[in-house]
Length: 294
Image (tube, rainbow, N blue to C red):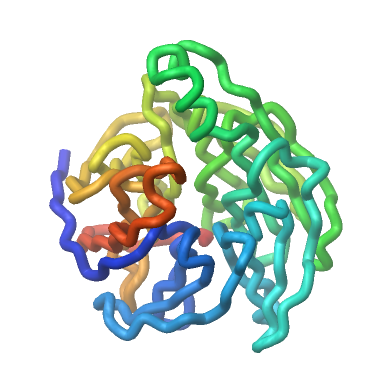
């Protein structure tokens, strides 16, 4: 098993999420600075791309180049075309708490998840031991077409968080943070999902943002550990990365897609982190390049 140690290349984020490699730059959301940013591959030249007052999270680009971004607290998806912003989809009827992660496929379909419940308030109310012992509420994965219409609602997911699609476009794999598993679906030509199955099951491991490499393995962030883990289908661990803080998302980028960028922070608890700027972006050079989507 390979073991790596990350290097911090950028600091002073509040809570970074949704990293995406796009046109030679790393794009990412920052929850509590309430904006989308991009930066150069080495962490320099941070640019404010778009402000999102209702808190940005997952993002992706439609085939025509429009940027989509989840607007968390009002449970919508926004479309950015140049400097113009508009509502792309309102998914509030399918969310029981904040909207969160999203993947936009090359075919123009969007897969949008939500928390399902107020994780921070529930943890504060119940305490850690009871929180772990009590099954969490489930929620939906919402599938949108390229015009923002809801074409499918996939129920009974335990905090869907982190999504990839294989290079051939036929398989979607999503993390279920509160289920400690990665779950796979077949992807039809019309973007809908079927044939749900477990891709990898773990003991208590809240999987978070993730990306796919050219060997068909997944790098996933561990939301309660200073670690990113690489796994094969079935759950065999083939590599780990030690980070300076808890890890919440990762993305393979760089010209050769071998820079693994990691979003870290002391905690994800908004009651403790929202007013701080201790979030970081860390990086490791890995052997196998990124593949598939995002």
